[in-house]
Length: 459
Image (cartoon, rainbow, N blue to C red; front, side, top):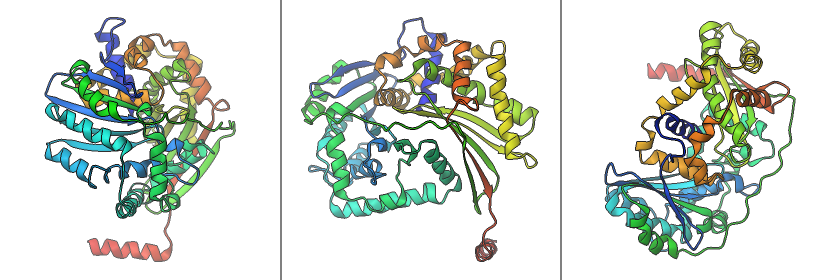
């Protein structure tokens, strides 16, 4: 999601600002303790969006401790040496603000939307829990149950979520991107307070964090507050991040799944793809290819497979590159009743082959940029959007200059770059791919009878 917002926001400036202009005009500095600070002035309202990003997520968890990064995110709301459990959020709400957090593979972020006059208080609270987390044991155990229930609701009780969780594990075998951010159920069940705090002590340190503030402030006017709060936090440098070498496989890995809860068939094909920090040209080209193939009803796949060939009731393509090590791209579709999975797969492959062989249609590249521009026309005016874009980019290895100069980079991408990306990452025999099919399943007799009884009771 961040990647798609990033691409759309940046493309607007191709048409709206002169060359060399910056996208967000963000201001930045580095504190003596290593904390990177970015301020994005936006004076439309006396409000600020305060975010603290840690450049670590589930990808750096120890073996057998999946879910510990996300578990720790929960525990940071359960008190510090100076705050009672839940006090952080109670203070934010009392001041009229909102707060939350999220964890991904390579970052964890904590954020608050608050009136400008309370920004200093947010800095005090957030800098306190950077090194002083101290959740009581009873709250740790109860919060683990909350995480387990979250997994049950979002994944275990959702056939599609389980299906894609399995596909990711096949696409990234032996790699942390192949395990769910929320963790495997049996491993989350065994997480303890000491494990979470060990992860915290190792990674939650100023030199491994980014403070991003978007809103009615400038760096100059809040720098003293930043230094008097975050600048007083001490901590050793975090370890160097490492990733295992993932083997290539040229033969497509396939998964066939079924579930009684599934109502309609689903097809998915996943590809390993480049990330921006490792291959900028290929990543930029994939971002445009994302829109050319899957950017809504006017894009190639929908027009060809849904409208013209009538082989699917929906078809989409997405490129995900919000990672440090490896990205992914996904084609998903729901076939029409009389279309086989094989026919649907062949239709998608044919579209990729047509693009590689014949190139883009007249004006297609310019039209793609225009669509992305229209989708992002108001993004620069929001508070949370720019803060999330910049924070996510910096947390995954990009620089602020990479973010600010995105329009120039997009303009440099050629049709040949896009064709090369399609050939190298989407063509059969060239790509590391997984293919999955999900179909309805007839439940066992006892379960079918229970479902029928339940349906009768509802009526």
